[in-house]
Length: 255
Length: 333
Image (cartoon, rainbow over all chains, first blue to last red; front, top):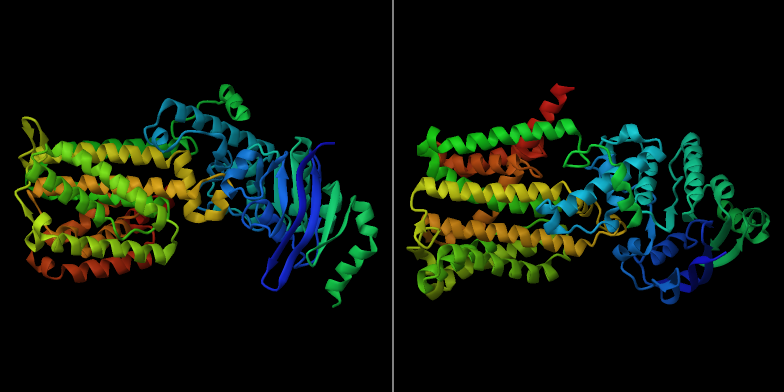
C-alpha cells in the first residue's frame, strides 16, 4: 500500500507546554486513519500543523511525496488536502448549494475579471460547479436542502454539508476534526454511513475523534496521542487492548 | 480539474446565475427591467430633478464599490474619499493645467487609484475589524488635510475652480441631461459588473472571507488576493466618481472629499442596505435628498440623518432594502 501522507518527527512547543513531541505516522492511500487521545493530547495542534495554520518547531509533513510543512493553507486544496471543522464552518448567508460549490473553488480558474464580465469560460465553469454540487447533494441525500440557507439547518445536517463541501473539491485526503462532536446517536450513525460511503470512493481520510464507537467502526488504523507523545499506532482492536491507551483514558476520567 | 469538466455534459438546464433558484432570477430580472425603464424615463418625467440625480448617480458609484468591499467582503473602509479625491483633483489638475481631455484624465486617474489601492492594500488589508476601520479613517483625514494644505496644487480651502465638463474631442457633457446619461451608463456598467461578480465563484469566495477567513483559506481561497481585488475595484469606482463629480460641478473642494463625506458613504450603505444594487441606490438617494427636502429639513439634516441611521441599524440590520425584501418574502410564503 502506498503512503499518501507522511508525518516525520513533528514537535511543537507553546510557551512552557510541549504540545507535540517527535510524533511520526503514515497515512496509507485509501485508508481511514484515526487520531485519538484525551483532551490536551495534541490532536488539534497536529491538525493545525498538517493544514498549514501552525508551523512545527521540528519535523516535516509530506503529501504524496511533496513537502507541505511550509505551505499556506489556501495552497493545500490544490495539492489534494481538504478539511472539515469541529463545528461546521459554513457560510451562513449562502445557500447549501452555494456552500458546496465553494468546495470546488480551487478546481476552477475564472478570476475576478472573467466572472465580473460573465465570460463564456466563467459561465461554463459555473455550470460545472453547479451540477457537481447537485451530484454531491444527491450522494448525501440532501438534495431537498439545496436552496435553503445554510444557517437555517440543524447542526448535524450542517456537518454533513461540510463533508459534502469537501467532497465537491475531489480531495485525495480529507481531514475531519471531531465530526461527531455535538451529534446525537442517530446523527452519528448517519455520519458513519456517510464516512463509509466516502471511503468507498477511494478518498483517504484522517479522522480526529472522541467518539470511540465511530473510530472503531470506520478506521483502519489508529494513532493515540497523550500529552504530546505518540503512545500507540495500531489497528483498532489492538489499540483498544493496549494498556498504555487504557491508562491514558482512565487517567483522564480519574485524575 | 478533470472531474469538474466531465460533469459539463450532464448539466441540465441551469440559469445563468447558477446557485440561485429560477424564480428568484426571474423576479430580479423583472425588477431590473422596471428600474431601468424608470431611470431612462426620468429626464422626461421630472427634468427638474436631473441635477440632483446626477449627484445621486455619482455617489451611487462610490457606494456600489464600497458595498463590494464592505458588504460582500466584510472589510470596513472609511477612506474611500482618498480615491474620490485622486479622481477629482487628479482629473481636475490634468485637464485644467495640462489640457488633457477629461475622459483621458478620468481613465489615467482610475488606473493610478487602482495602483495606490493595490499598494495600500498590501499593508492595510492584513488588519481586521476596528484596526482596518481606524487605518482607513486615517486615510480620510489625510485626504482632507492634503486637499486643503497643498494649496499650489489643489487650490487650498477654496478648491479647484473651472474644471471642464466631462468630454472628449468635440463632445462635452455641458447640460444636466448629458451628464445624467453619461453617469447612468457608467452606473449601469458598474452595477452589471458587480452583480455578475457577486453571483459567481468570486462572490462566493468574498462571502467566505466575510464570514470566516481561516475556513475560506482551507477551501483554497486566497483571502489576501480577493480582498485586494475588492479594494482596488472600490477604489476605481470612487476615482471615476470623483472625476465625474469635479467635471459636473466644474469645481472640486476639500469639503467635497472631506471626512464627513467619508462617513456619509458608509451611512448610505448601512441605510439602504448592503449586498444589493437597490440598497446603495436607496441609501444615496435618501441621504442626498434630506438637504433638498425643504429648508426646515435642511436645518435639522444632520439630526434627522443621525436618528434615521440609529433606527435603521437597530431595527433593520440589513438596511431599508433588506427590510423590504424581508417583508416581501414573509408575505410571499
